[in-house]
Length: 324
Ligand code: GLV
Image 1 (cartoon, helix red, strand yellow):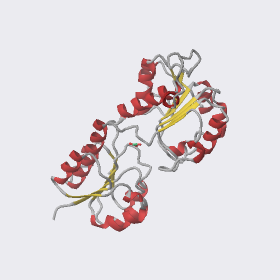
Image 2 (cartoon, helix red, strand yellow):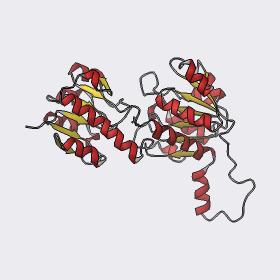
Image 3 (cartoon, helix red, strand yellow):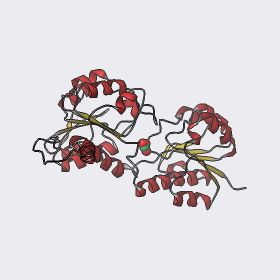
Image 4 (tube, protein in one colour):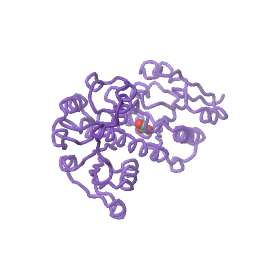
């Protein structure tokens, strides 16, 4: 009997085909496995799980997976998986680092440009038929060139954003658990800020690239927002709960900050009602890694981890295992 793999949503077909060559593969319908009980009901039949970041892989789900050997998340972030439970039940966990760095970094720069030059608002104005004369004072925005970028979380994606921002003429400051190596600091001409307070106060644009943990939950709160310059822009392509959305919506509505570009939300797929109506805010549905090339690479990496574990490869030879 071949081993059984559950992919919880339709993903790029070449990835599904790769797994189908070796295993019996089932693919869930969109959204079905966002439900914990559905996962608990179905998981006993599978040896491997390839879930999305929207699927709650809780202790109950893992405990129900009597045959489960590996969970290979279709994402670099893995806050949807109870790692302690996976360890307790001896289930390996993998994520998809590196392959999405460029896509996410490019997208972040895209959001920075779109918010600072008011692209969405300007298009709406045009389509609403309001562009009837070229306006010397219309849609004045902020240039990235010469602005200061504050990067919170100088890991792979944060560094990718900083490199691109430097090429656009931005000054780079960053806040991280620790300083990055001095060679990288030199290349980026980056200044380390030991406090978040200092970083946001100095930054024209603050961009978030930290994982979601207990420490980073609501890292951007009312106090931090109040320290930002009044034309500051906040960009979030990390995880929604890093930002207190109520506080952000308040800051945007009261124009105590200049704008925001948000690809992630506290209660996805729901949007905070006050963020829906917030001015100078561009909202996208968690698509920073959504290029065809990257989504295929993400799937392939997850599939490789599944194959590695199910074929009994040594854990040290499976590069993207978070825990064996
Ligand atoms: C996307 O948000 C990811 O973590 O890959």
